[in-house]
Length: 502
Image (cartoon, rainbow, N blue to C red):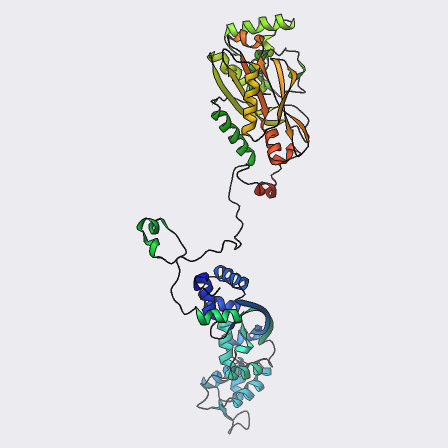
């Protein structure tokens, strides 16, 4: 602490201002140090932390003008108005009263005070008809007048700051009703400590100021070699700032996109409104399947998609539906528009339009399910769908790809269970082990598209497909037990999450 470089310039300014008396009210210290209020208060906290100063709570009596005092400051005290009337030529009491500038209650007091101030000569004042003469001292301001003017300009003044003459004038004014008001004022007094005095004696006279900013110009010019840089207190508390940032769920979506791109995938996008043809029929889902009921799907009323696909694609889908499920397929049902229930409607249309020999594509976006909202279900959520097609693609490739995907998310414990989906065979369910819950948790579905899906659309090679809800990944990453917490706009939780989760 004996090193001068450990004192910030703000601290030095405050200590120098304390030198004369060793103590000073906070407001006066700020003024004496020529610092802004915020900077000075910050410096005072630093000095208190270093035990160079202390603060004591004090109180004092402050005086200000009352209602009658403000009026007297503007119009003049009664004795001054009395003198002014005489100066206008009204030298008898009768003529003075006729002016009506003083009420009868003020006349006697005005005469008494004017006589005490030696402003008037009453040697010839024996009756009302005798004259009242002004003396040569009539132009001199009284102590009361001087204090009134001072209070009118400055208003609040501490009694301790009054001179002996002003204190005498104050005692006279306080006898008059509502001329001055006394108020108790509490304030903080800053006191220089013994440690602070030692710092002043040894170091504060050194005017050299250490440099506290490292600029590009200082570095490139080489000036840094000859500059005395001030030390930085690395344990000093800093203000907490909350700058604008993306929602953590958007960070997860961006991370998932980066993982797929790193694995050689290309993103494709599509509308959230799809025809039933691409959302259901092209995926070999029968038109009487429970998932297509209003209880599970949001339909767009009054709108149909007339240009569904090519006539060849429509005919092939109609034939495969009739052959596979044993019913007459209805093209009008396929024209109904829905809020997509999965992003597979986007990826399957991409394959149908492009018919690639090999491809790695993914789609990520909002999907909609007419489900009851609960701690693990939402009616609207984000889903990522991936598709890989190649001549020799196998289920083992799919399992390896999924393991790599989850590993990049920091998930090492993963296994696969057999399950059923209408448009994949074989089908698997990916499960990950949640250490917080101490159990296996379902993450997403996966499988190989059935021939009933690929052949009608002219896709010759095997197609590996999988999908997973982004919110489930976010719940695991953030340790949430309720998916609704992601959308609660809880600022405390949002601010507590670090930008980098790994």
